[in-house]
Length: 153
Length: 288
Image 1 (cartoon, rainbow over the protein chains, first blue to last red):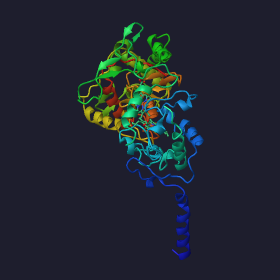
Image 2 (cartoon, chains in turn blue, red):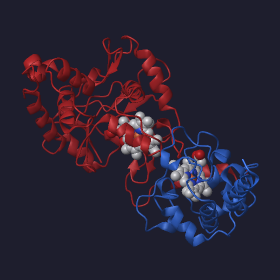
Image 3 (cartoon, rainbow over the protein chains, first blue to last red):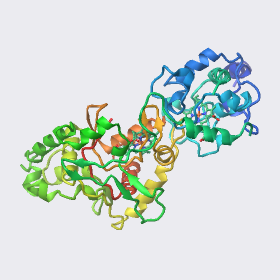
Image 4 (cartoon, helix red, strand yellow):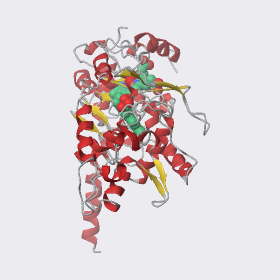
């Protein structure tokens, strides 16, 4: 292999990982004492976007399991998990981020709640979801920002 | 942990109510009669082998909306009965090079098939594994009728399976785990039942054991029993086979789906039939 070629390979490696500077990769997010203290995306979370992600069946689909009075208009809210009303009063932002990133690190291995930003998942993942997280780092921040607005019981 | 875990557990109990749905979280306590014949929709859980997670096994019928429940009570209202009638025609139709129909060998299904469906899946010494009704039908077609086996989920396969199972309506499901190597299939099925799959990281048990009685969106989670299959699903407007249902549940975890009749799904069929042992065959049950 000639030198120029080696250099270009190294360059490709640098560019390919460039976005990691802006957001933390799933494997690098540390859940400490049920908290993820630092934001994992570059932009601040946008609660309006987070509200959409929360309801969207193809994204968070959080309503599958959680009742949320703030989204009264949405039919068929599940009750597998607790209601989201007043959730901001029950958990700190760093804890909410940990719950959304990987609920198993907070509630234990047996929880039904999926980890939305982890690659620690089940076996036989379908081809199109392999190596991918359910939400992007930015969407996680958006959802956390949205949960922070849910103050009233 | 901050702001007590206890608080949300308590909250969960109070607010765990889907908005806009009138139904309670628990299954109803109601009795099912189909054309006047009583069905066993709640039965003491099988004791052998040990380790059944429930005290009482419950039919999926108890988890459905009142309109869906009442459709199953009257065979004129049950749309799946049209498929059963079509199954009867297939039973009597000659096909294949041997010039035979099912009836050529088995005569009246109401006599020869009574109780048969309640005891499947069943150990098959020739195959060296358990087979279900669909595979038995295919074996008859190939070996006795010299006809092509049905492709998975061919309409005729579903209609004929439903017709055969329907001959056991009301009879309790009971699989014979002492035959051949059935226990090792039961073990394999059990392992699979607790195996978490897919990006959503869920096992059968996560939904049907730990969370049955609760709502996942509009779906009232049942124990996932198999006594009503093939079931008539209103959403599809057609019969749905058991392996189709298994594959759908696995797909919903965002995992690759095992093939119909694969060893994985046959093992699951053995294990889930045992889990729902004692419940009446309800084929064709009506589901949403």
